[in-house]
Length: 206
Image (cartoon, rainbow, N blue to C red):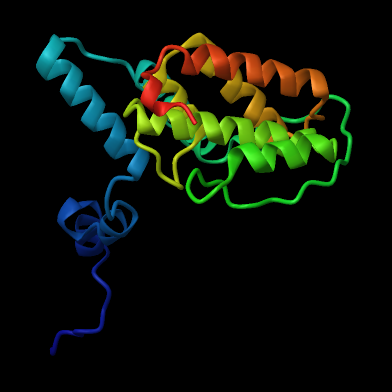
């Protein structure tokens, strides 16, 4: 009698199903570890190799959360340096008109332009020009390396003087934060500028 090759061998099928070598679903479902699992493994291995400590999954997750928070804070800090005006707002919320111009320290008649701004009672422009004039003095004294792309925060770090820091903060608030510039603020800027420039060599004064 010829054997029926199509007859299902239940015992053979059961044996094959229990054999891990034929568990194809497992291969599909475990096609690789996730990014989170990889990070957990890297951290656990590093801590074990350097500190000889075995971390639990919960501790590793807390470490990953802490790293993520630090990365976000670092990115916010970098963005704040590049765009300080997004983080500084006038408490009054006054919508003052102000013509945004490119800030430069070269080719500017500071004395004449400041006088015109004061005469027109445009103290916003006057404050801006006084600050730029101060940068011009600092550049000539080689205390800063002026670049159009640099922010006031970078100049504050380079100079590291309390009077100049106060000037920079006033400038940022007026230039980017929509703060109202008054005659009193303009006079304070002049006083701070005098304090800063008095510490420079006479050749840098205009």
